[in-house]
Length: 231
Image (cartoon, rainbow, N blue to C red; front, side, top):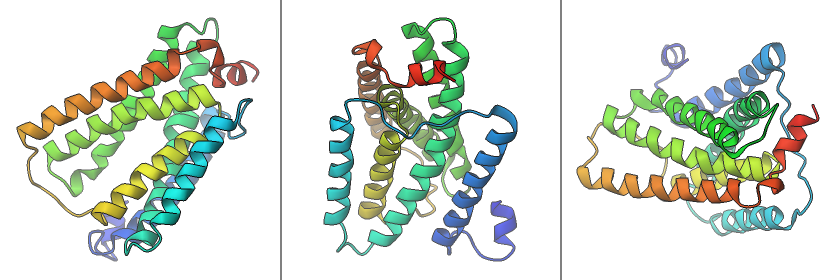
């Protein structure tokens, strides 16, 4: 798509327009392919015990409200909403949902749930190699690894809450704050330094521990599995 777009406009100079077109087309393609091939149901309606995720959504809204005066606000809001919607629909709603339904149809043991979560998160991370056109290979690989680990938390929240709204909100607020602080993504071909790799390892370990706790704490409270079994 970037090659087609570059025939008319420079994706780097018109990044926001490019990313809007790219994400909107992505959502359409994802929905059409899911309808034709997988037909995986995506769950938005929350289960019982809504208080904790409603509180989280309110916190996200408060953060957004405080950022309104920032000069990057509207661009950050746009980027966060589009990334949160398209990528969560694909990798948590469809891919993770399909893997869970496939692997836990006979037993919902911890290792089957974690394997489904790991595969979907790795696919989510590898998806970020599309950014090679704007970054160095080491910089993109850094992003891929970080995204895969963060994807474990996003998937764990979908499993626990039973609603895609929760990982969507976390994904949105993460990208939103990144854009608020750093502005629009820019081309960067600087290699990743050794100290940054060390920091990445620490971050990945923290993400994995959080994801394990979310999924394995009171396994019977994971709301997505009963919904998938009732299909």
